[in-house]
Length: 293
Image (tube, rainbow, N blue to C red; front, top):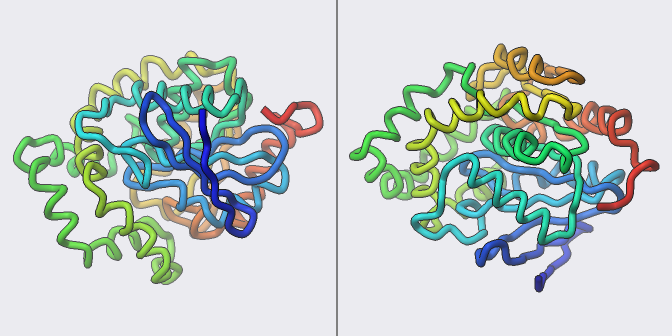
């Protein structure tokens, strides 16, 4: 597949085609492949501070998942969790990645785990950063509201006009809202203005209950994948107490809590976040024992 690229400070911005959809992604480093999957209404830029650290030991790929960021987001794109996992699998195919370490945040963590359940032999290790899950009660009412036809129809247009609220919601994702910079707010707002992004998020909300039932049923198929579960102690979006329910699914698992961090520790405290990630990968996916892809 043709890939275009533009390099900035050692991190390449590239694009390719997956299932006929344009997919933008960031790339950096050399070594075993490490693929980063962003959360709902996020995109690859969210990993910007962690990528240079992780790329010292890994070849890092961070896609904007279709329907998000600056990848294609056509109306009618299949918004089921399993469809997102399958698109992620085909992104790996396009990159020539037969096996990788896979890290996902929030809904991206759920997507990563769903792929590991579909194709466990393809995932050397998992790093799950506060993954959305059926045991967290936080946010259920908001998701249920988005599932209502009238609310779902109005949400995209209202959200685009009410950009002044973006700062409030980004602040809620940080343990310390004072760490949110003007550049961070701008980076979150840019892709949200694109047609299809909010609409796709609404469709994900419509499928939430059935996706979580399927997720719970299929999760044991990934039990043999070594897994690190990471949470910020001040996460306001996904209940930190649900980390135990996630970790107990795996035969080999570690759980780390980053004190004072919120829902996006890789963005809020990247150095503190990357340290346990690299420690875990060095044990369960040592670079010297693996090829690049």
